[in-house]
Length: 432
Image 1 (cartoon, rainbow, N blue to C red):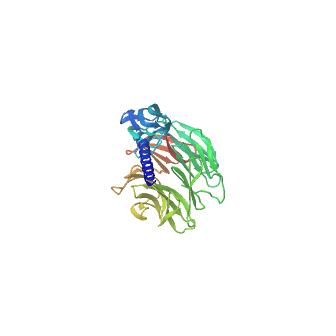
Image 2 (image 1 turned 135 degrees about the horizontal axis):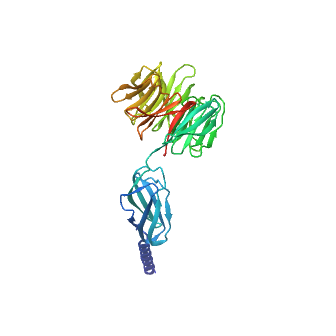
Image 3 (image 1 turned 120 degrees about the vertical axis):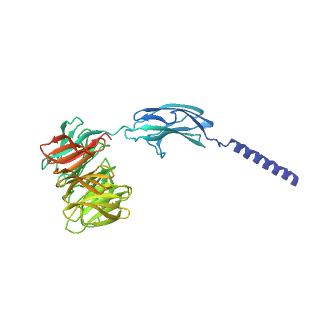
């Protein structure tokens, strides 16, 4: 009996081993094989081209899915993926993949094919180069004050033609534009909170209701960088996306008037002036959370912030009736005085990391950071606003009811545009 039992046990053990070996033999351990035929490596494409994609995909089992996408040099997707479901063990892929993102930058990209068989997968990459559509200036946007309750918006095209685009009913304290989304943002003190207009149709796209306390905003309350950031006279700062949804929210910790804003990498800098004659500060908030990082006690009023390098910001400001230039490291909360101007500053614009034009009450000055020099390049020219077109090295100077276009660095006058009403602001609208 014992002998019979032993034989049965050995038989069962051998059968189980054979069955396990058979199962292991049938287990799918091979990934699909992907062979690219097109595009060829380093092939060059431009925006709105169609990438011809040809590849052969094989597997010892069944290919369940094939995903095709375009990724950037960090392997992040930049265009919508396309999926195929062959359900065969050999699949010849042939398709066109349109590059339909107008805003892609020039650089190295990869066409990626991901083949799966239910148990294994294979990613195959083919390097390509995409050339972007060059930036170009579309028009100059000019806002003027027809009367206390009407804003007229003009456009100056590349042929120097001036045309009235539309009117806005309400008062004005600030404006901003986004060339990418073709939107104009206008803020007021009592009659407008924020109105957003399409620069394609010239129609109102969205607006925020006027709510007390008044005034809602003060001068220089708007700043655009991916989101529209707006400071409110009742101590709040909000950020909105292009649809008007709130994406950023923070509050000044004590009484003051937040005005000039600037986004520097992961930080939002805010100039806060006292409304009672007390202390003034430069606040720093984290962009991602809105939480306060720090505040710096200041004795000046910011005219402009400019990014200088990875750690520092140049502050153009007025202090005790004259202009001052500061270098500020918001990560270390260190402020350094770098130069001063005897005149009060009205406006400023950055030419490059080293050169800055500064409009004062007695002329236009060129500041060179490396040389720590100030050169009066247009004495007597009283600029209220400055804009710089880096594509053509042209400066737009707003003074009284005129806009002058001058060639930098010689500052030769190229054109003058005259308006019948007071100019409120000027913006450069690009194609992207």
